[in-house]
Image 1: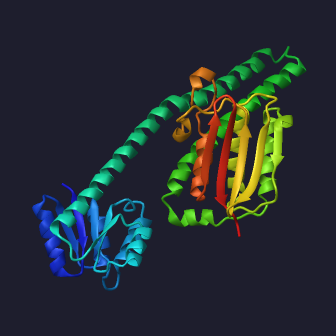
Image 2: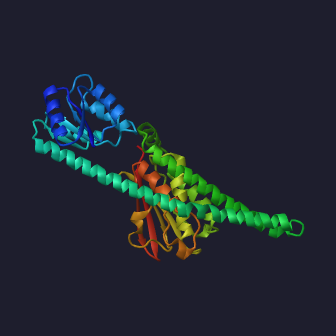
Length: 364
């Protein structure tokens, strides 16, 4: 049975709403003020909350703020009751995260219609979230073991060569084996870093304080950070001559480490999926008050519809191209950009050109 909490300091209004809900086979709870309402929420975890705005001591805005700051209650649908119909009051409630509002006096049909709309929307969101979770589990179960197994197999094979042939192996052969082991270990280390980071970012989104701290970081030397990341990545692929840099000195509202991570992952994809001899361009600009980073390659690109499906553990045509990895790099970069109130946009002409466009707030 759907549990609905009514927080209302007017006993007559409160009793009327409870009676209507009870008659419609809901399971209603009630509270006469904001503080007691928060207690009921934590004790009973309702499926929806109806809350008056104007209440003594703790008003509806304060109740909503506290609920949205707690991961356990942040997603409960919240409907404001207000005697005011001014747009300013409605806007303030929506900015705080309210899902809907009812202006008093309201009819029985208006009350039940608003509740039905919110509950249906919540059910749809939960269904989509569950589907995404199921898809993620399936992707992890297939991708992660393969992503771990490939570099591990190389390390084990090359280590076996050293153990069995150490007495006769030539110095140049020894160097090649060592480089192979080191490269595979690096890929494995990067995979584990991204695996832990994507999980941390999902948790970070539910922590307003940590998220606010993250977004306050600023640097004034984006060109140096991006250039260093680009040169390291190009060297890893042996393609220093393919790198084209156009990076003026621009500030950006992000930390050095986060900007470096975004650039490194996007550049890794650009070099990985393009051929030696084809240029990889890295360009930054300031446009419409925002910091813009372009990474352009001439590789295989994305097919129509794939750019909207970028996410953790999703690889496109992995079997066709026999590629390593688990599809975490691009997803990590996209998530970092979004958490910094930015956007990652992908434009691709399959087999010809792919442009990654990162938009971030510009530091004052």
